Image 1 (tube, rainbow, N blue to C red):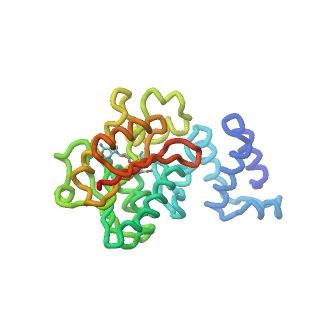
Image 2 (cartoon, helix red, strand yellow):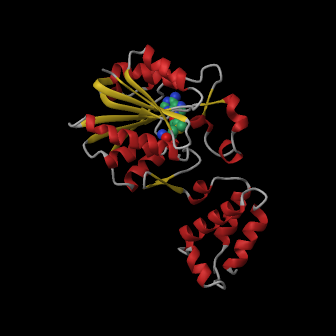
Image 3 (cartoon, helix red, strand yellow):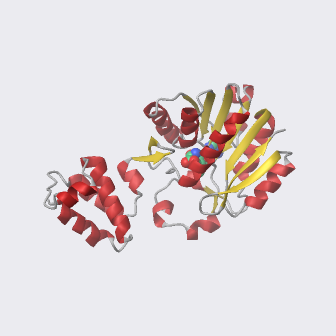
Length: 286
Ligand SMILES: C[S@@+](CC[C@H](N)C(=O)[O-])C[C@H]1O[C@@H](n2cnc3c(N)ncnc32)[C@H](O)[C@@H]1O
């Protein structure tokens, strides 16, 4: 089929679901990723033909079902690095890149070898980006999902870094491996599940229907369940000058300040993301 005709079919089928620009953006991402055809090539060769277009039609079907383009491609970019993603891993968000950047900039506080743990590591995007950008760090990643950890390990290989991944439930210390009891960490970071059930109505179908609910949701009655457990963990497991970094629910900034203050953290800083939403917080042990 001619690429131009295929583009027309994409618009016919998808313009009811997405903006026209978004449809073009999906179309050219797929073409570039799978066939190495860039937008400029199509402009220069309007009669270009795609010999085997079956993959494009399969992608079209999945886009009609509102499946995220990152799952269709099986890959995304985070902090300038490639990451495999599947339906078992949350798609890394740009807000989380800002959290990573904050930690990378903070590492000057530690001019020795340092140890970092990322709790709820998912695709491993935080742990791996930190390992890549802080060469003197020994990095650990923990998740309750064996399926997510499988992808995280592949991502560490893909990015040629060494991260120690472990399967454990942060809410249940009986599942923790011994190393977790034995070690202290200079940085504890987490982007845990934080979306309340009551916020489901604000979410788009592509997130709600396709991303793992294990990674997203908490009960309305106890939205800080992970933050409380991880803060408790941090009070015991941070080194003296250690720091705790969280990505947070934009509606719960004050509650988070309260939680860290109550647990005697110092230099507490709430930070907004690029969308001017309260999105991350840091506290230091001493
Ligand atoms: C919001 S996602 C974050 C994933 C990744 N760190 C990121 O920033 O894109 C939360 C992660 O926490 C994990 N998780 C959920 N419940 C957990 C638990 N009880 N113990 C450990 N990890 C858990 C999920 O599997 C998911 O990978």
